[in-house]
Image (cartoon, rainbow, N blue to C red; front, side, top):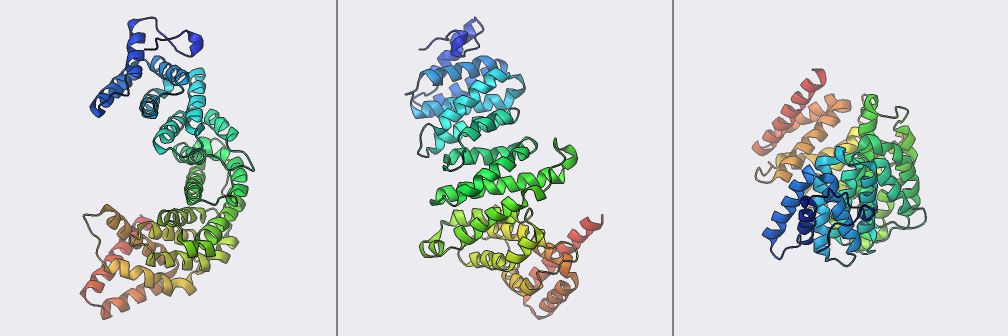
Length: 404
């Protein structure tokens, strides 16, 4: 067993018996049984809630000294540290936080290969610390996110998760992040890296949208969506034209999970694109998204992305979608006419997203859409009539919310 070292080893010791107890728990955390691991982890967590500096600094020192420690043992300690940080972040001083951030970044990137359990645990610790020490975490990430070189998969993922978890502190960093990201996209060849960049861009876009929607709470109220429109528009071109629509993707087939993540990202990104740019690419984008319905048995993520695109263009009085309206309705109607599987949460979500699409289309096309629905109601069988009435019910409820 490694006993607590002096302060220069990083341990914030108390001088009492609890120091030995802490190190004993850390040393035995990788018990042979799963039940034993859970009990020791819980004991460490309970102790960490009362003595966060002691437990976290002991874990830090232990991981630093044991460079060849079993990976499973490292994962257990990192996950326990994340739990303690989430519970006691306001009690963690800057010095200890800085040590933990450096440790987390090192643990996350010391293997060039993707090792999900280990690197997810390290990334989770960094994101937890980023709730209060966002600038310090990002300083460490920027050291590993340099122009001209593809970063580690988990560096991209961590920056994306930070944007999702800490909107107000992260959005000011996104100007630098996006300017570094754009040249990298052309270097990406493998689907896993395409996925993680698409996922991060989706989270960046959501964060910017939320930041600007609540600008009165924001630390920098000069930030607007327009600041990011050029970079997001350029990234959108890569995702849609190269990763989703390229001949290579069509011949070899992009992974289904990748396609859905790209569509989800595109949906969020459309809210930040310049109006002229969005209107220019809209017909091809809609055609590309609707074409995915034939390739995926589960339509939820496609409809969610479509919904975001429609929401971005269906501003009051904007009828730019009129040439695409018939094609959109042809794709959406069959999904309403098939009742959702109430034992499948994703099926229910998908049904609700389809209804949301109709509510969005009703903004610029209320009269035309009502006429089409009434015509279908008269001509359809029972299944179709139930579907049309469901749409009408949703539109009435949506309208009551608009005017309330």
